[in-house]
Every structure is written in structure tokens, then in C-alpha cells.
Image 1: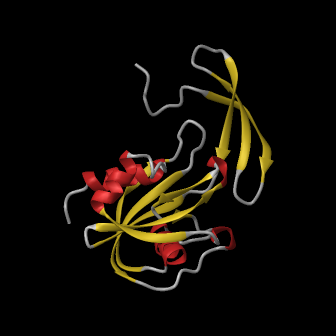
Image 2: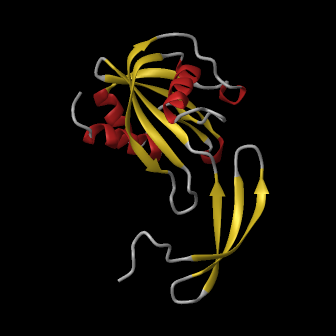
Length: 182
């Protein structure tokens, strides 16, 4: 019987074909379990944190134009901080940068794979509570970002009607729903 933790595909060679400050694309020559060879393209990106800022039975979301999909979209705050000491520190930083909010409690809900067919990138999901408003300190690339608070029922309707399509936000919300009540 095959050990499910052992790789079934063997890497024969790996070449980085493109890289910049945010992403690297590599092409791996592989050998499958039947001995056949192939190529696998992999995007290497740093892990990130996603924050669910919750208060008054509702949630703070951010909206910005997403160039790859050609439209504005709502999501939970999320991002990475190079050199951050921990996922929780990243969560606090991203929440403050994107929304201006600070949280007295940042509870880990879990760790998820992001697009596991193309990248090894993972993200940590945190529930932020005990929120205090402040001024956002967004990066230059986030200059069109805005935020708003939505009641739970409206957030769920936004998911159902396709207003929220960010798979990371929807997966994170599922983790929240499956977590024991607080």
C-alpha cells in the first residue's frame, strides 16, 4: 500500500523561468508513478494572513479593483508582510493597514492551501474582535481600496449572489461557521 504522505510525483529538475518581488514561476520536469515524464508549472508566492473583522453580528470588508479579473470585488482584509515574525503579527499589520482597525483579540481559525493545483502558497485565517477604529495606512497599490461594514445576512447574500467571489474569503468564512461558538 502506498503511503499517502509520500510524493507520488518525482521532481527531476526545476528551473525558475520568471521572478519579481512578488512571485516566481518555475517549471519542473517530473516523473509520474507510472514512469512517464511531464512538466509541471508552479507559482511560488509567500504565505499570507486573512482576517475576519467581526463586530455587532457583522463584518468589515474591503473592496478594490482586481486587475487579473478586471473588476472591483469585496473580500476580507488579507495580505503578507515580508519579514513578519508570525502569521498573527501579519494579521494585525494587514488589518490596520487596510481598514485602520485594531483588534484586542486575534483568534486563529486555521490554515488553508491557496490554489493547491498551481501554488504551494498557504494562508492563515484569523477572527479579529474587540475592534477599535483608526486611520488606514494602505500601500500605494491599494489606493483605490475602500471598506464597509456589512451585517451577517447581507454578507451571506453577497456570497450567494456572486458579489463576493474571492475563494479565500469564502473558505475563511466557512472556517468561521464551522468553529465552535465564542
